[in-house]
Structures are given as structure tokens and as C-alpha cells.
Length: 331
Image (cartoon, rainbow, N blue to C red; front, top):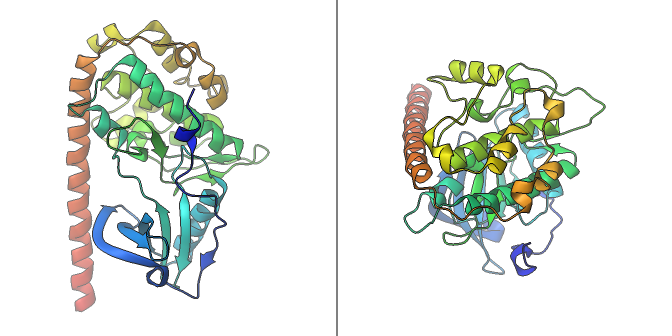
């Protein structure tokens, strides 16, 4: 069980309102240091002027009404989800063209980047430490009638570069969920998307749990159970739902861990473990093996390197498109 100090929030609970009469620069020193760039926005290091607290400032252009609605929904969801395993929102601004959100600063990097580090000893027990935290976070999200819908390794960060505390981030695709209303979506990351997403069928809390199962499979083996040569092939594999533990990396993995995955990667959504059920599974309840998983770590390194390469290619394509748009605007 985590100690009390481990669960202390980064800052006291705050009431978040979207400021429209002031800008982030009025309250924060925005650094030129870019922390990250995604499909929808750019994140910079910033510091609150009155307290000196270091935070992250995310700027998202909202040229269309739909863009603004999406950001307002994300802010509303993050207001609700105040929990030590989830990234916390600190402030929000809207100047009519761009919505800016001030976020808790997380400097530990992605979970898989931490795991493949030379200073990290990857064991099955270490995997249970991470998976228990992920399930704890997802259980809290679901208890607030919210579905994350984009759970993947890139959205699980370590709080520090040396510790084992994790934070789930990125609620851009999250949705409020009413069990009495049918909800369907057709977005997410194919490799981690559940069959009901790919088939555009009704989704629920169980949709996130499939993604948790895929994350666990990759963490224990360095292999992706449904990854194809392209998105179409990957989605076909997800729809079929066939996977196995035949690779030699699973020889060192316990039957309890495999059973945990088996109870999450179930095509019939109603038969999947809930987040609460996952936390009660023997694999997370009992002390797992402390045997090193060197073969897994080697394959995880390859997996992460491949992901970096793909991300770099997409970044170049996006910048080229942006450059072409700028050129057209200048004509």
C-alpha cells in the first residue's frame, strides 16, 4: 500500500475557472523552453509569478467552434479528476483564439522510457507496481463516470526520473459517460483501441480496460499483441482479438500475470475485468516474482525506438504541411 506522503497532491485542490479578461502572461512567466508538441497544441515550461511554482503551459489554437467545445470539455473533465495518479490542472485562459491550460509539471518522462533505462531493473514485481497505479487511476476516472479513451504508454508518465510514481495524462479524447445512453466513438490509437471502438459499437468503462490489458502485455514482453504493418491491419487484428503468449519472453512471466491479461483482452466487453476487479486480481494483490526480465527489456527498447522513429516522421510531415500552409497564406 502507498504511504500517505506518496499520495500528497502537487498543490492544494483548486477551483478552476476559465479566465477571459486576463492572459497567462499576466500571472505566469512563460519560458521559451518547449516541453512538448502534439497534434493539438504546444507545451512550455512556466512559473507562477506570485509563488514561483513551476508548471507547464499548454497552448491550443481554437479557430473553430468545435475546437473550443473540445477544449472546454477537456477542462471540465480535468476539473473533476483531482487525484494524485492523474495530471492536475492549475489554471485556464481563453483569449478568443487560443485556449491555454496551466498544468502540473511532470518531468519523469514516459513510463516505457523509464523502464528501458540502464539504471532500472525490470522485474515482474516492478510491472505490478506500475499496473496497480494505472488501475487505481482508471478506477477513479470511472468512479466519476468518465472514460479516458486514449490509454497508451505515451499517456502514462513518471512523476520523477528516479521514482516509480506514475501519472496518467491527456484527457483530450475523454468523455462523460451515462450508462443509460448509447455512446459510440471512432477515434483513439488503433494499437490500444478496443474492438467496440474499431467496430463503432457501444462503448463503456470496459473500453478503457482493454487498453490496460494491451499496456500490460507490452510492458511484460516488449511486444504488441495486435500491431500490424499499418493501421488497417492493426484494426483487423483487434477485431479478431486473437493473441498468444508463445514468444520466449513470456517463459519468465508468471501464470498469474498471463491470467490478468487474459481477463482484460476479452472480446466480449461485459466479461472484462473492471478497474476495481483488476485491483482485486491475485497478480496485483500478491507479491509477484522479483526475477529480472532481460529479454523483455531488450524488446521494449526496440519497441520504444520504433515509436520514436514513427513520431519523428509524423512531426516532420506535420511541419512540412504547416510550412506549405504558411507559404500559401503568404501568396
